[in-house]
Length: 114
Length: 112
Image (cartoon, rainbow over all chains, first blue to last red; front, side, top):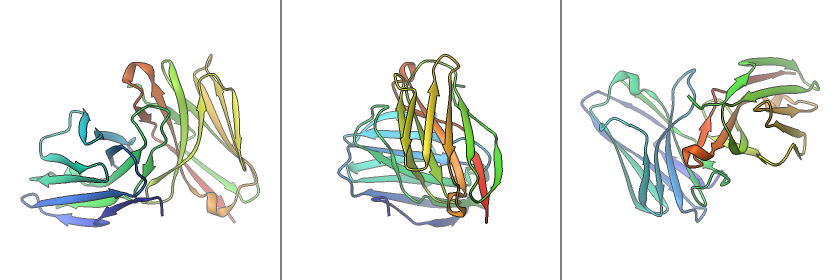
């Protein structure tokens, strides 16, 4: 649909589980992002990667661990999450990390932590 | 917080009417972008307006920017039921390394 795909679309996990979210972009972009969207709160930027290097870590707890093996793939590894981590996790990509670059979003992964 | 604030938080109109959403921000920006999000889905970019521009059009969308008031508005003309979505402004601040900062959004409902 937008050139950015995310899997899985829905995930339910216990607090002791380890899971990973996957994002893939087919747009030839150099930058990728993870955002968290909680109910009734603004979109929160979590991580930014530019040319596979992390350029932004927005004070995210260590139970979230990103990985960017190449410019087309981005992972978010989850470990010992809390119920308040339940949210929609959105991946995005853009040509660069300039503010003028349009970000293209995936459909998101709806995460529920029990 | 440097986040933009949208106003109103929610808007309900009849099909065919115009919808106007506003966004206010706090400090100097490079540009301002508007995005749309259908329920539970990803965001879709609508339009970007640079700090030296005052108005831009794209189809039924009209965006204005008033840097003296630090505000922007998004007008959707002749609304359709398919326009029902949440609309977000995102600002690119010079002092924040040009990263985008999203507002909380306006929920638009267009009734047919």
